[in-house]
Length: 381
Image 1 (cartoon, rainbow, N blue to C red):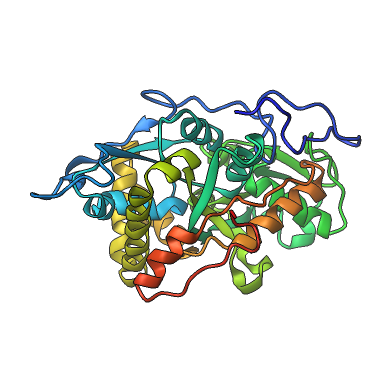
Image 2 (spheres, one colour):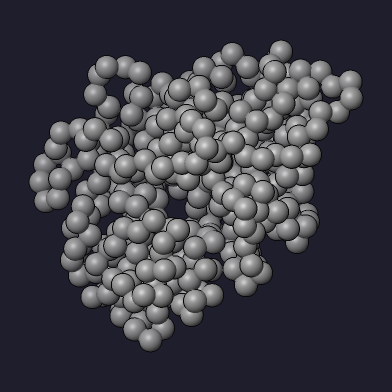
């Protein structure tokens, strides 16, 4: 990684840009990595029988394996279903798919940088972080995966309208993560003031890990949360109400929640393997959209394989219907999300030119007779 400073710094509250913080820059910076189970940076997924290699299959790009990373989250449905139903293995032939499950974006980026994984499904904020922190040398976004699946859910006894959010305690997953930035931007648009770093102001923004947010809600320590699925639906199952779906704030009700990234080294050295994974992703997404109920079951089954526990129907069903599966990375919305972070004072304008390389995906889409996608002017030369 280059020794020079990244192109932006986090700002201290109410002041000019401060020194670079050690634990990272960008939207997910200043946050400790979550402890991960099992080995290395992420826990090895139990892929079971889904990764059986077909008789007579040949290796792709001469590789013994391709290592992919994703979160145990419904917004990573492409990866969950692709592993569970064997789409990735089918396209990679005798090159074995080795999936790993992560709990935090910074950990997955670190795994990509170290070579522990080759390709990953990840949210926009850690992708921005990984790209800018390396001066544009670590990764490329090569495809889309999901849109939506983020909601403001509240205690209906305390909050009955959007105006009632003022003065209340609302959880977000992490300081500066994708949902935190979106909520801070929404607060600003209401004309309210909140110090981004401390979360104090006209609304109390309480940074809380998604795993404990339902317990925080049940105990009354928070009045609501701006969170992704399935956390939002878990809160609803505890009596909360959906006050706002974030998709309603975006043009065409679409915004990026999950992208596909690859290390630039792997992209350069193994283009056929990258193309195979993208082809599998496109085929998986097509199957998901054509068979939503079967896909929902497959995604939940893989969540059970990876975590030991499937989601109950009263959480799974509403969470699933709020997520749109797409090949389009929705590049213009990633750029907008970065601008929201700048507006909130968490981010100094990043240099995102070159973060996308959609040529391999567009090749796959064109061959499949599907519309190609756009990089919003942020593509690699």
